[in-house]
Amino acid sequence: MSEGVFENPLATRYAGRAMLELWSPQRKYSTWRRLWLALAETESELGLVADDGVTPRIRPEQLAEMRAHLDDIDFHRAAEHERQLRHDVMAHIHTFAEKCPSARDIIHLGATSCYVTDNADLILMRQGLEMIRDQLFGVIDALARFADRWKDLPTLGFTHFQPAQLTTVGKRACLWCLDFVLDLHETARRAESLPFRGVKGTTGTQASFLALFRGDHEKVKQLDRLVAKKMGFGELLPITGQTYTRKIDSWILDVLSGIGQSAHKFGTDVRLLSHRQEIDEPFEEEQVGSSAMAYKRNPMRSERMCSLARYLMSLPTNTAQTAANQWLERTLDDSANRRLVIPQGFLTADGVLRLALNISRGLVVNSEVIKKNVEQLLPFMATEDILMEAVSKGGDRQHLHERIRVHSHEVTRELKGSGGRNDLLDRLRADPLFSRVDFDRVQRSEAYIGRAPEQVKEFLADHIEPLRAKLHWSIDLRSDIHI
Image 1 (cartoon, rainbow, N blue to C red):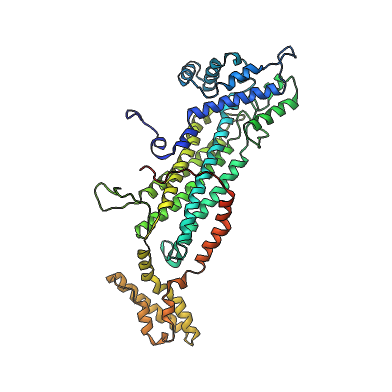
Image 2: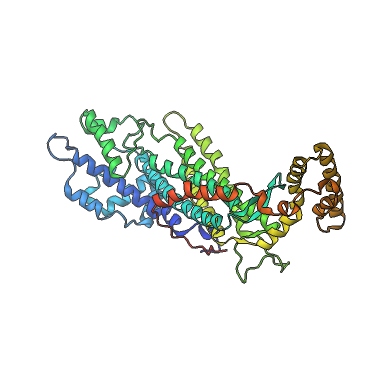
């Protein structure tokens, strides 16, 4: 860390080591070298010959030399070349060639810059999606365990952030969990179906490779397919210009944005519940909530997650505009932009999910506060049942409704004026019109949670357990996120 220059907070504060390594210069340029090797190997396997039409154009020792230098990148030397050439791909071709002098004339043979830049981006994005998928599963698993533990605890449900019918703490957690489950399925689908640009040439016509293979169209088609297979891709774009269609970038950022949306909803709900003192995020023993107000216990993890999520949700606008502004076969004004938005999209999603995992693993339920809040408003929620029972025992529905309305409004005025106890049930119990109602039954909060506990059980059985059985991804994320 250098205090004298700006450093990206995504790297210094929020993203994890594995995602930072994925988008590092080392990973990027070593991937370029692997692409150059795959191209040369495949050209050799397809019998590429020299101008005499007989001599192999690519010799085994050249390939061996390239294999021996896939990772030992001299970044200082590459920077020197780029200052002179003003072209990053050519700079790295020269740097690689200096390590592999016998292979100098076959590195990048027939290719355009986008052969390495675009294909490498697709490789890194697929690996990034797989990492994000694993992190999503960690969050889902943690929220599912939380939901199972608290599936029976009644709590106030809210619409318009006003008290509505009861739900349970576990049922609410399933709402958060489902959003992340949908994100996981979309992330996995995108990772599995992501296509390779392939070996398409300068404007996508494969003209240079057709010349290399002396007009043999079938070998050019094989070259395209075999290089994709060597790099681990089953899907191959059938048509490109110089670049792959930037709609793919837009799709990927839409997936990441969806994760931001889910995390923001989760974090906002935790912040609202923290204000009500019903649920708290993890809080360290020596953590400081405010430099001035020592008593404060701010939901700073959730706030940070929402903050990062907001940035993440803004990025698809950028990639949509890039996709829309591709001129003919390609324009270079997407280059600097994509160097920023694609890595930072993944780094931000990584930071968001690290926080989501930390929060979901450490949620604290203040059950006594929740019970007190339910008891305060339960009498209002019980009035519909009271009305129906009184009607079933011979009462006049409209007359009974009016008496409940009058009692309720009197209680509301007193609660707002003095903040006292909600005594609506006592008032109704004392009203002769409701003398035949079983008030012991209507006072039980469990009577107003509907199928919430059963919905939790069914959701976990039908949607979470199959994921746990199917997915064997390694989740290795710290729960103690650096603050």
